Amino acid sequence: MTGPEISGPEPPHQLTLRQPDDWHVHLRDGAMLQAVAGATAAQFARAIVMPNLRPPITTVAAASAYRERIREALSDGCPFQPLMTAYLTDTIEPAEVERGFAEQVWVACKLYPAGATTNSAAGVTAIEAITPVLAVMERIGMLLLIHGEVVDPAVDIFDREAVFIERVLAPLLQRHPGLKVVLEHITTADAVDFVRSGPPTLAATITPHHLHINRNAMFAGGLRPDFYCLPVAKRELHRLALRAAATSGNPKFFLGTDSAPHGRGAKESACGCAGIYNAPFAIESYAAVFEQERALDRLEGFASEHGPRFYGLPLNAGTITLVREPVLVPQRLHGNAAAGTAAELVPFHAGETLPWRLV
Ligand code: NCD
Ligand code: ZN
Image 1 (cartoon, rainbow, N blue to C red):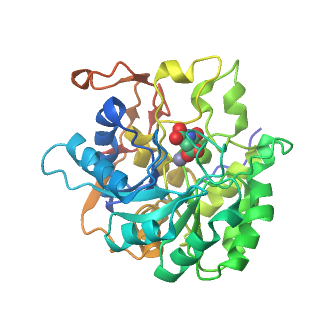
Image 2 (cartoon, helix red, strand yellow):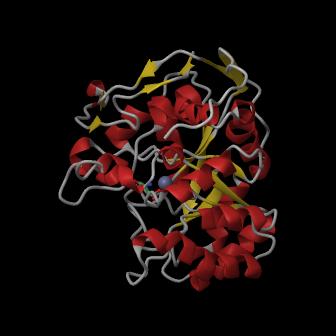
């Protein structure tokens, strides 16, 4: 199909942005943490660290110790700031949640519907069970981060986000009008519409992979586990709605990579794990989308400003620079051999060339 020649100003050669933050990342623990922490710290000043370890981070002491292990995994003097989260269970005590917030150990709580995704078995089985915790969070101004998918096996996997919004999220916002909520890693036009038209207490993160791929990617020429994540990628119309939202300049949408490393063996298996490892080329991946959408002037808001404003945190003072030079993403990344990890990781965009390179 041929169309009119698209003409417009040439993209700039160099782009300097206020340093971005990642508002949703899995840094794991042990050898995997050693292998992946540096990639996130190389791009982002801060990151919201997911608590779905085994066992999950459900106490102030566990979050504090995990934060220390993240710092130790980075080189001395690395200014990266891990922002910790509490993993909500049916039985977590409101007082524990409040204490961790007051002591500045964690900044938010993560709600995983039990069974929705990797290491979510200890998650919440009935949202009503945690009403007292949500009431405390609402009172103290602590954010709720939501994996927004129902786990009802009768619901088609591609509909789980839209059904969650209708069955769980909308009533939740009604019950807790003062609670700040981030709907994490949104994947549908339904979520875009709901967040856009929702109250100012509601925002959403968007991953690079959901901006680049639709569900066809998982089946292109055979089964492609490297494109499998949760929530699963949807059809093209949803990807286009996400691209429009991310590049719109609307402050309700901001960067959250959901970088979720699993070793190659765990991905390429009879029951492969959900998760895409995008941290090493995350900002380059977003920059490619914003350039394609002719919205490079809006990348800084999405990557570096909307998130901290929603969280009520200061904007970063430092900057990063991207140059318009091709960068080849390796087919494989090896874990840190010195740290004793054998896990080989396949990064998002493996084997592709991206147009912007981080200096
Ligand atoms: C995440 C993981 O592996 O921890 N996987 C994923 O596909 N995104 C969990 C999650 O965020 O759902
Ligand atoms: Zn995640």
